[in-house]
Structure formats: C-alpha cells, structure tokens
Length: 251
Image (cartoon, rainbow, N blue to C red; front, top):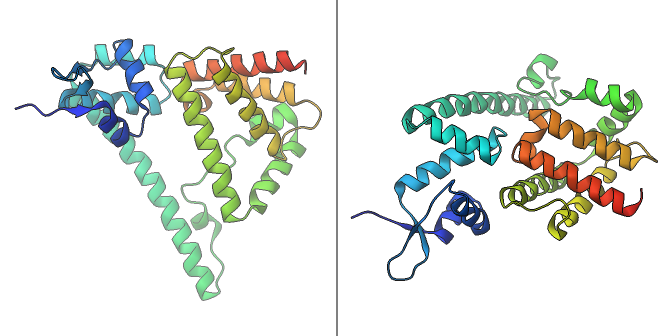
C-alpha cells in the first residue's frame, strides 16, 4: 500500500512553508494528491523525490519557470540526482577543507605556535567580491566593511549571518508565492533589507539609495548573488521592491 505524507509533515521535513507547497501545487510544479476522506493535500514518495530536486535546483539559483523546464526536460530522476550529488560532494569537500583549516589553527594556538597562512585559509575565499566592491564604492568602503567584520566577536558574526540567511529565505519564499514588489509583504521585506544594508559600516554614507539599487542590480545581473534570493525571480523581486520603497520614501 502506498504511503502518503500530509502537507504539514512535508513542510516540516523539507524546511519549507506550507504556503510554498500550496503555491507549487497551484502552478503545477509539485502537484499534490487529495486524501479521499479529508480532502487535504497529501504527497507520495514520488512527490518527495520531485520536491528534493526542486529544492536542489533552487539552491543553484534557478527560478521556478526554469526549474519546471529542467524537470520536464530531465525525466530520468536518478541521472539528474547523480549530477546534483556530484556538486554536493564538491561542496562538502570544500567545507571539509575549511573545517580542517580551523581545527589546525585551534591546535596551533593551543600549542602556542603560529599557523601557516596557506593552511589557515584552505577552502576560504572571504574576499571574493573585493574587486567589485572597490570598483563601485572605493577601497575605503571595502576596508571599513572588512575591518568591521574581522572585529566582530563570534556571536556578532553568527547574528549577522542568521539575519542574512533569514532575509534571503524570506525573499525566496515571497518570490515563490508570487508576491508583488508593491505588496505590503514585499515592502516590509524591503524595509528590513535597507536596515540590514545600512547596519554594515562598509555602506557608503549619504547615498543609501544609490548603494542599495546598485547592489540590487548586481543581484539580478550575477547568478552568485541571485542565488541568495532563490534565483533570478527572487533577485528581480528584491530590486523592484527596493526601488518602490525608496521612491515612496522620496530618497
């Protein structure tokens, strides 16, 4: 007998919202079955495999239309998941190198020894956007932001990273549900986003509007940034919502 899971079960296990699953159902991306007695949405094992693929593709920065096209095109699920597995293993290897680098540094500190730079930063690239920042806003802006980050205690860094992750997840969810840039939900997110940008000392003083909109253009133009917001559709929503809020504020 086939096993089914309720929408609440799937949402909890996959760390998505039930609203997102309902939206996926409405647009045909992840159709749900209906319980014959209750009429509630339920999902079988095949649907869970499809959801896993959707979430993996979303992490790669694809928007929902692109995800639908990929799923329609790549019907061999085992083959497609094998490709995802290879990418995940590469990422695991990179993270493993980071863990080993930090462990080596901790051990060296305990022995009162100095770590070698080539060992300390294996797997890290915290300055990957340095040239882009300096080109747009100058070396001083990058230096202020970099000094601020290095000066944070571990708890401060964790709070910043948590807020960044929550903001990205909320934008991603809003875009997946088709929230419009002028809707109250998107405007509230835009307010949070502007406050988040302004809180970092690397932000240039006196031109938050130009800074925010230039960054928003980067979100849309560069898949690396767009991936933080669920892909191209999420990045477009962020840019449009930020522009709407800033225009409304008259900044």
